[in-house]
Length: 326
Image (cartoon, rainbow, N blue to C red; front, side):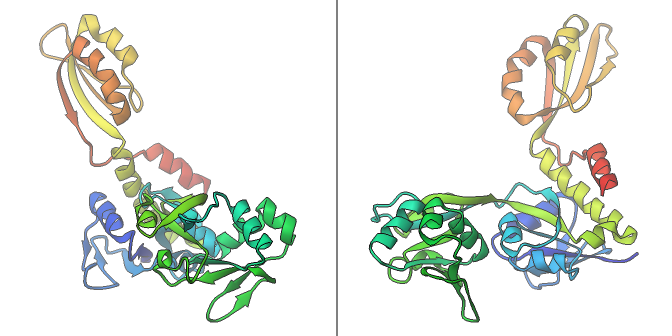
């Protein structure tokens, strides 16, 4: 069988990604010592890469599948297929500036620097997203029209509006203001790091989380497609299991109908008669969020409640349907 090349993220997403794979019954060997760890599935070849690189590596077929952030897919404009939102690595990409600035919106910031005849300097590891966001701002369009902000990197410059500049940051972006930048565009999870650096977020450019992506040719390749959807299935199973509880309970026949009316299930609960006449066992999956609301009903109508947190819940019909649509 042809091996599927899988790119896993090195850095901030690494720990949660490796944990996800372990929970999906994949064993990852040597990730702490090598950029080429081994996976318990020998048909999958793993490489650790920076999440910034993964979208383009996947888009151009250097990797078949990969895990990265939605922010880097958008920043690189990579032509990839998003297979699964992994629901971790949740961050906001924000515009932030010094707390002492008496400014609360991008429009106010643009107007302030224009009236004071100052160059607005923005530092960011992202270039395309801030530029596009700024150009769509009403104050910017009124003052500068369709001129693109000047983007500055050590290798090239792009854009014709020298009054608003975006400088490529190589990290420690929060340390740039106020001496080296007037504002930054950076990711934040809780806002704590911004606050510690005397910065405040004034606008959210986008929200992002980790996603599983695939090369569009690889997903159509019969030799790779099945293995790719094995990965999708097992990772999806972990994500779904975090939202569900597996419950077992006994109920008297006289209470069965009332309980079933209030009991949610993936399809329909499994109902089995017990050896003692007039009693039934119920086996079902419910949402974690509904458990506390359901508990008073269970206490009133059921006996012998057992609750498990499942390790995997595989929505096979949904995944099969998505696979057929490709």
